[in-house]
Length: 88
Image (cartoon, rainbow, N blue to C red):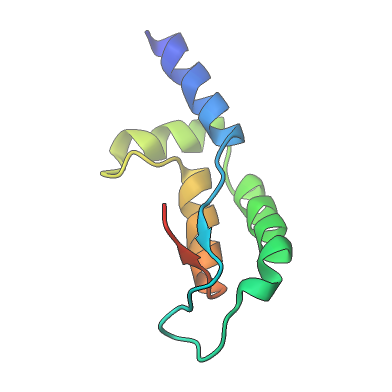
């Protein structure tokens, strides 16, 4: 069972694709920030990869009320911080 959980976490980490509302605006910005979405997706993914590993993902997932991995949490926070409206 533990091996299955670890395999699922690893696969889940590779398949995370944030859903971004590209026509909406974040409440803190007067203009749309979606024009930078491709660049921001790449940068945030790199930042999340550099700051997470298998062990940190498992530990974070174990204690997270939303059952997110550390990779997903960092990626989501990075995109929101850059002004994108995320739906997931």
